[in-house]
Length: 230
Image (tube, rainbow, N blue to C red; front, side, top):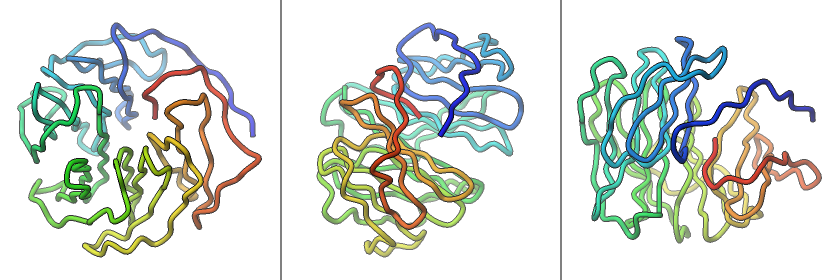
């Protein structure tokens, strides 16, 4: 598998996450602000101040709206807003175990998914109304971390047990499949063919998992070490 390096650009602070949009920009989340960058050259266009926004961004590409999982001294919160007129809207709040434990979230046209790490529940919201629709109990998880929504399913990693579960978008706690061979499984994403890419928290590796949940043992992507990517 070949990867072409296109462009490198430094962000102004530690980058917790990045999201592409279909309106020609890239959104980067740093410790307390959002950086809006031009997709062609990654040059900084403008910043939006979001206090305590220390999490991965997910973007509703059809409306260029962004979401973030933020943290205060004692709580995590899920934030929803507009890039042009950001207005804080809390989807849910949970107790924070530690300021360094940052949990991700994801969105597609119909749903928003956010992990409640304390109660080990995956919460599903409507992307249209932002109402809470249902929760999926993450049975067997010790510390759920990464989450990614596809068109018809949701993927969740557990950084402590090294598992990756794929769930249908229903309240059922039974996964479609489970991959348990991913020590320190962290951030993740998937492509249009259903292949899943998972980062490892303590190694410079991205693992590749098939659409049926099988790990490709001899294929991995090496990258320069960083804690938070994808």
